[in-house]
Length: 285
Image (cartoon, rainbow, N blue to C red; front, side):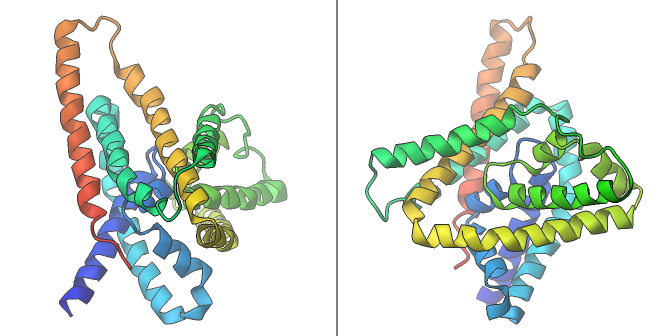
């Protein structure tokens, strides 16, 4: 009984952490799921949904409760902290990513490392780097009206599903690229049920379409897939560094400022590393 309650609480807490991170541009919900050791279970529950409907519904419900609470509460705090304390918070996230790398590396040990392992890692790394350099609003799906607008909403939902499921790809960044970030925030604050409903349905359809191929890839080519995922995850830190850390460094920074920055960065990095390391111990098998 205790183990069941602990498992339930762990799922909710991990969902909370993933939900709270998803609204921050540069931070991937898929990455957080990987680092927290719940990614495989999420993918399996969705792709094999009809094999054990009751168990999968209960698991996904607990996860969604945690994620919903995270989106509605901590995400706003994190965004406020990023706006006011970008350096320590950004370094904390980088430390969190580093804290999850050892667990990912263990998953590649089923086969020995070889030259092809480095190629898959670089491929994953470069894909995320490329996506990070796509200009915000370059597609402008958020514009238009009538049937075309709602059709583009459906396409956007499928793109969001890709960002949700694939580690290293920030959902918020993809919304910015598609010109949908402000529209999405406005729809939430104005309770535009039609808009949110269509986008939600499209995203759900996209998630169910994408998870089956991903599960097959994880099961058939685990070594290559996890090498690429490590590239995705490490590549995702470059956007945090480029968009949050570099702009926050003052042009007139002196030796005292740099000394304080180094000390603060080390402390924040260690805290992030320990936080993810501690949470990732509770693997959900």
